[in-house]
Image (cartoon, rainbow, N blue to C red; front, side):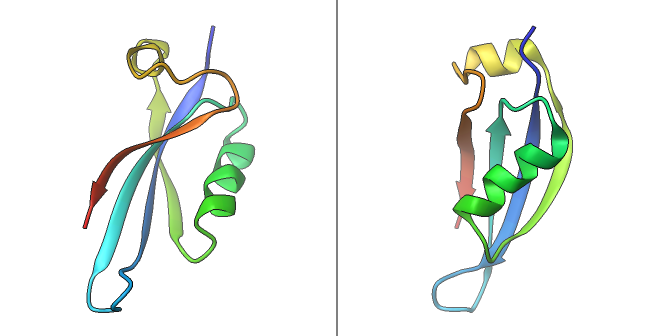
Length: 75
C-alpha cells in the first residue's frame, strides 16, 4: 500500500511582501526523506508535515511512489 505525507511549505514571495504557502502530496514512505524532497525544490522554505496522506488521496491525485505534487499555491 502506498504511503505518503501532506507537507506544507511557507516562504517569502518574490517581492518579499507576503508569505506564499504551498501544500504538497509526497508519496515517499519515510518522513525525513519526504521532507528532504520538498526542501530540494524549495530550499528557502519552512517545511512541516501536516499529516499522513491516505492511499486514497494519493490515488485520487495519481501520485505514484517517489513522486511529489503541489496541491495548492496560495499567492
